[in-house]
Image 1 (cartoon, rainbow, N blue to C red):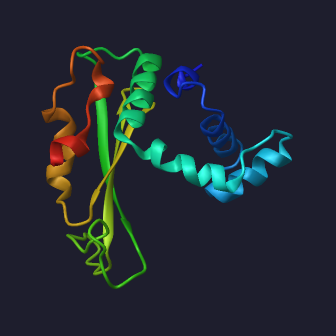
Image 2 (cartoon, rainbow, N blue to C red; image 1 turned 60 degrees about the vertical axis):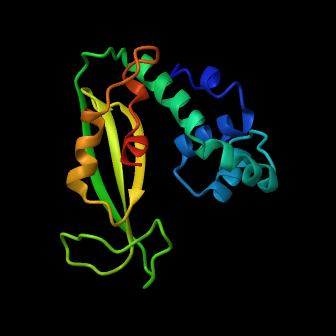
Length: 164
């Protein structure tokens, strides 16, 4: 219905992860349990771990975003909404991505900032993650400042590319 089968090239491991998380939002390891309880054959944990880097690749994320945009019926003049939030980690040191940054709560722990792009009806179109030391004010402007390539519609907006 959303077009993920076509966007993922029929990848059964990805399909299983999506189904498991629709049934019960759990960790990737626990997703295998959820599939088993639902009577569905799931991949091995080793196969799941091997596939994860491909699912994190920019090309993969763009295909899924394009499928969401097509489902939402977006065109270049569509209204989209973008919001950012900060996630904190219980550690004292950053790692290059999780870094201390501006905190409205005055926290000192490393953090990351996530951005969610939705259609005007709230349907999620894209999720991006940014280094914790990037200012929310700059991240919030990125989707609006980056024009979508005409060939792929509004879903091709990618704030993480613009931040580089």
